[in-house]
Image (cartoon, rainbow, N blue to C red; front, side, top):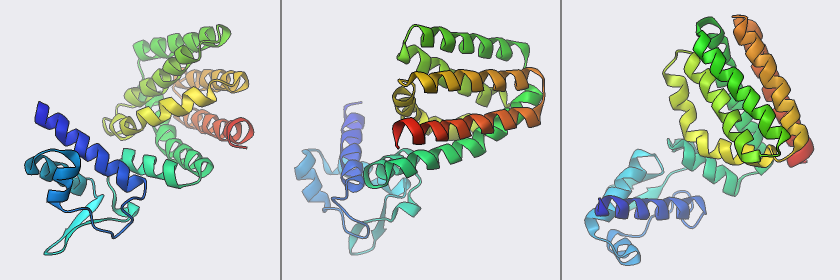
Length: 232
């Protein structure tokens, strides 16, 4: 357990240094012994952390030369990509790119869910929507965000496709942080409640095309709200 925590510490430290640009693309990481000294851990711990960076595509090994940083297009860790784009890219574009991805995934999820959703899931969605309304009236942003995220998670699960929730899970922390920012704006809360009600109505009607359209409209409204209230 202790070594696993040490590995995580080294891994997080190196990943953050790569994201921050301390080690640019194609530059070498410090040697094993240097990293042992920097992090005050064993060589085995350093090797395990480097192994994870390899698995996530952040670095590559070049025989006889060392370990080098890969360009972001080769990274396979979604959280690392999101953090790097947030640190190095245009925050407005990052937010809009995330919405585009959600539009593709969640629109399809809503269409599938309309065909497969059961009464229990519909009841859960209705409760979450009421929670959003109550939280908005009480100016409880934290409760609003929890219900909002729960609403979307319920739809992903109701799609019946096991891959969709797994694909979205790495974004959970990013989405929660983004919702906390946007949901502090009363106008955005009002729009979200309206759009979620339309999505629920389409799901309850079993209309896949209408559910996809309603989810797409929600994402479009979110993009407009971001541009108007948050990243103008």
